[in-house]
Length: 371
Ligand SMILES: *Cc1c(COP(=O)(O)O)cnc(C)c1O
Image (cartoon, rainbow, N blue to C red; front, side, top):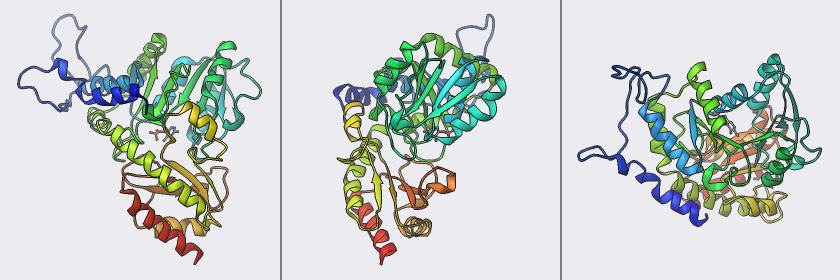
């Protein structure tokens, strides 16, 4: 990580210090309230739970510190993505999405935006610059894409989109602000599922929108307050707590992935592998240039669907589960989610277990599927 990221990580747990009075709790109190004491002219303080809550404000302050940009919190990653679409788009707009990104974003555009007169095109992440961006009001990028881990040049895409008069949204879920900084690379908006590594304990769904454009922040905050897709105070409190250890967990997970990926590549049960940190991976050179870490996701292909299931279920230190970024190592055979990948395709999310123990358990399960 860069010095700037280390400085952000160091001050993260001390953001509230300046406002503490003698005797106040150091950890963030949980404020479960739908209504607040609000006499007289009702401005400038908490009034009603759909408008504001101290736990949202605290988690947004933390996320804003990490993103170096104002943030608006949402009850899920899709809640954040929906807010960007519904607050910023209008009938007649065209948008461009990755064909290989998180599939629910495409479903949202196809099923719901289409009905409001917004048309949507898709394009593979690995050749995202091809064809240019003329005519697109909003361009949406996911890099590395989930689950194939292709990447695109975010700064070059931002340049092209801005030249064509559009706005660039980057889904930074797979990297977090410690792994990649799309706003610094020229993106207008970051969206992310804090359900994944930022919360990190797989017990909450959460999301946020970050932008240095005040109009964008006002629009998505107004959308949240009006449409009512608001985070719960307890969920915000849990994510606030999770964020306090994000740097520690993310560092462990990325470091472990860098150790495990080359060993997987060398294992005879693995037919092909994708990890941006592997020399020779199609994403590697660009990843070195635009990412601060290579992430904790590894995708690989074994001989068949059955072998993939046997590997996942036979590994003692691995849960068979969707999602990623939690303290537990999890893996999923992705054809069961309908991704356009080979039958034996596995997405592995490296967790926080000590790396040698984790590798021994992965290796033992791989050895068994070729025995
Ligand atoms: C999980 C995920 C989302 C959606 O987040 P939810 O919290 O499940 O709504 C969006 N984008 C990416 C890349 C994701 O992995």
